[in-house]
Length: 434
Image 1 (cartoon, rainbow, N blue to C red):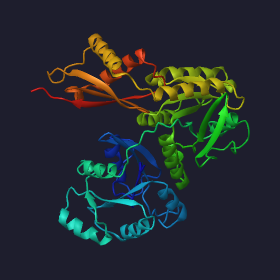
Image 2: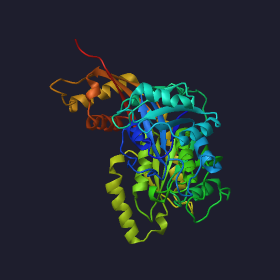
Image 3: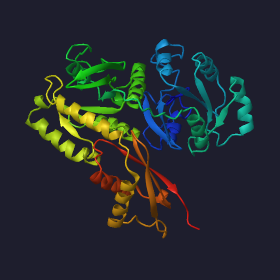
Image 4: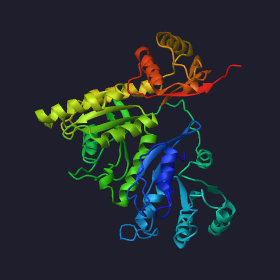
């Protein structure tokens, strides 16, 4: 499945603005300064019930020695990790020599390339198309990252290359991913599960750069464990090799069945931890949180950790939290037992009659608020898929249901059905009254 799209192009062509439009966020910092994006920003784009990753990379051809030419082997390696490429040029500035060089080198990768001309607000489209025809791309999309025109068109082209997952009846082993910031103890946890030093561990952030999948039999469970590369804070991500790490991490999350989000108890709950948790939730991956190194925390660190859990993690109260020591092997049996339970729940097929009965009781207890004086009527709900669990709601003006009300429905369903560690996605389908 082609799910990772990397934005490439020279500096200041508007890649970050396009990233923000596609992900419907303001995560990428946008500045009218060439080369401002010095790191890699990842996000999730959902369009017509399909999901893909967007990776925003720094502009190519910096004036310093950090990234000087696309032909550099390491830069190419980062780009080749992605499935599809979106090559962005500046329609307002027009064709420049570096665009030609980038195009020539991207073609050598033999990957699907979406050619996008940005900033077409104040230009004549026929002139732009004629000018950039020199690059030889048959399919050209004209967009404005600033006002959003053309974003739906390019999103449609991307999802046309994303295949639907085919559900299998074969009972395969659980793929358990370990996600966390650098030096949190991921490799140590793998070693504890394996019972041997198969992974290399160092007290140095970023040691593990490649995703490693290892078969394990532990506590009577058979599963595959995946250790992902650490993802550094944005302020510390200056090396192209971290871009490779981010892309591999996204691929690992996508391929996993359950994610263990590992947090360093000595550091408390950091913004980076919250960002990683948010990514897993956006993708709807079943998850649990493991607070590592709790045995080494002093009284003050324990207090900060407890405060952080109570305040920063209260919005994800359906994701279980467990204290462990990966180094000493404490709490790992319980951690794995819960991971297996979450995995089984994620494959649950919910009886439609039971689901509708729960929904009607939820509506009776709390009616959905009206929208513009019009009553929202939920008529029918059924399950549309699992891992992540997707519930399809049919009714009148249901697309106007607020996020707060959908959270209420999610919480109500969880009280009746065991869905610990699992994010519920709602798909809203209108049937308008005459």
